[in-house]
Amino acid sequence: QVQLVESGGGSVQAGGSLRLSCAVSAYTYGSDCLGWFREREELGHIETDGSSSYADSVEGRFTISFDNSKNTLYLQMNNLKPEDTAMYYCALDTYCIGDYSYWGRGTQVTVSS
Picture (cartoon, rainbow, N blue to C red):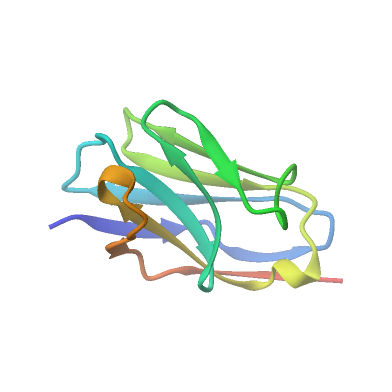
């Protein structure tokens, strides 16, 4: 059974940075999409070929990457704003069909002004 476990959340002041990690177990990266969500808002995702796309709200500030050797998804968040405060989740969409069927339990990010 595929499992996703997020880590790296915490408290930071506005303008600061955080990097979230998502360890994906019992999984071999194939023709899938791995995405990051803020609550239920998709922030972006990455595909097998390394291409990624982002929501307008985080374009230019957040970067998604995947380390195949560690089976770990990352979300680098820069220039954080108080409105970025939320639970962050990673999720897997097998075959990139638009259906994220596997989810982590989330990690909390709090940005103070």
